[in-house]
Length: 149
Image (tube, rainbow, N blue to C red; front, side, top):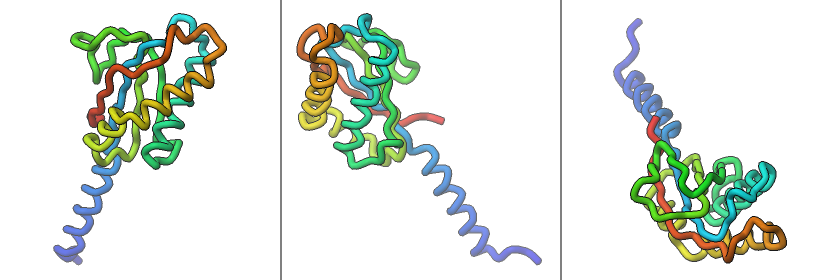
């Protein structure tokens, strides 16, 4: 017995929706000054990633497991964000945001003063007494682009 056209259309729409959900991730990156990347141990690099992830999740209302961050040297040449043309930075904080349905909205959050001040305060609290800060941390750039499969 052949499937009814209505069921086939529904199955196609469901499959398309599932593909769309899978592809709704964004690369959301920050360029920072005031961090001595070379002085960071592996544990401190992980702590920076966890600290920034927690602040992004809190500010966006996302689940913590949907935000992953990692810190790299400021001149890191990410495949999705080439270093040529970027301003000089001490650190490049790369984030992968799952369930990122609006890259434009996410960029607004990343460029907004609330998230930036929370990240700077959290980094100062975490690393203020260590030699990993080379001044007051500052975010000097942000970008958000959809992840391509």
